[in-house]
Length: 96
Image (cartoon, rainbow, N blue to C red; front, side, top):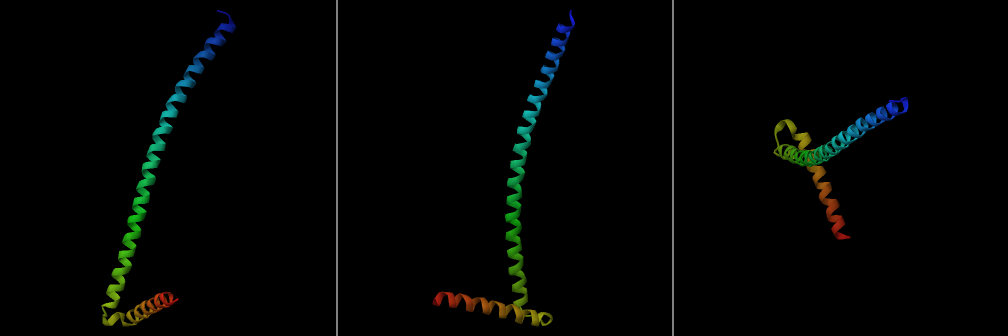
């Protein structure tokens, strides 16, 4: 074989390897995108769950404060005043 034919065969072999690698990487990329989408959806669900739990915690904390234990009377008064101010704001908005 001449040098030109050897070079062509070598080039063909390398091209076949490159195409094989390209197809493999293309398939791997597709799988990774699917996994990324699943993880993104899971993250959204967990963020929503966290927001719900934070709201519940806040409500429980307010309920415990309003319960009126002797240790938290100052905090209880503060929460009640805050709630009264919020109610007053709502009433003002309704009167407009």
